[in-house]
Length: 453
Image (cartoon, rainbow, N blue to C red; front, top):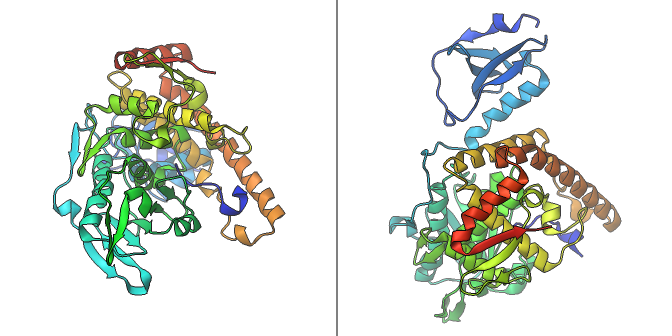
């Protein structure tokens, strides 16, 4: 889950061909991902070429005859300039992957990757600890072995996502460390933006994961906090850290993918600094049945078949084109009951896992779908539709009106992007044929999808 709702509102002149200059062979991190497209100059002349690279001023192409060429962006029509500039950002989102990429059966970290460094020990009431990729800021002293214990959840999630089968690129934070704040008091956790019933939460505005001590099963002993002895369910932390590591995808991806990929990571079996993906379907199944976490309690939508499995309603076309408002049930979409929101999360989990295994080329086509959606969201400037920093200072009525307008605008733009990308997901299949493929995939695992509303 990601925290989006603001706190106060919750209660040319030359012909195109004459300006093309043949260049040396260029390679990019996304080589082989682009396809030939039609490009138009400001005089209306067209060419069919593959975009290889772009800068703020130029675009580099491979022509149909195999030669490589360069063109100034200001010689293209506005729409094609935007397409070329958008290509520039692809390397921040994608990396190359093997053709037959899969989740590794097991992801583990070595002792160096779980090493903890004490940066600040109580100065100004802060206790700061660092691991290779994370910085943990606590408002009370933690035993070193405790930090090493729970930090492995974060580090192994990072290691797993670095090996994700889609080639999603993680974005390193400016500080060099992903920040996690830990709170001994539930009140302090809530004051920072945490939800009382959540074991952890990612806040995109501050780029932080918030975690209360309670969700880690801690107790105070002498001068430091230690483990109480009982095991705690790490699935929520796995979920929230996934949001943090893929933060730059949040404004460019459909909500079902954002939550679904986090749920898939949360469904992997975690044990002592290791994540196991070899029995992922069992983890997903257990999550839906409520055996793994209170977050995934069984909903009334599950129709048990006994030990053999269960029937589960799902509407792929509706869910994959849902906006964040529709998925979470806030304005301008209709309100949803908690069980309906839980159901959306469960459906998203099934859809993401299926899309990554949809035939021999599933990952490639799922990647194409996500890139199409990313480009559509970028063209719509979704990342620029934000709540103003001074929202809390505005009169209540004015703030509510502003938030309503922002929600509506985001809702409309998200819907447009989702509709544009949907055909890439189904690869031209009808909704019925796509659903049949989904059913065929899950039946061996005892999950029987039924047509939802």
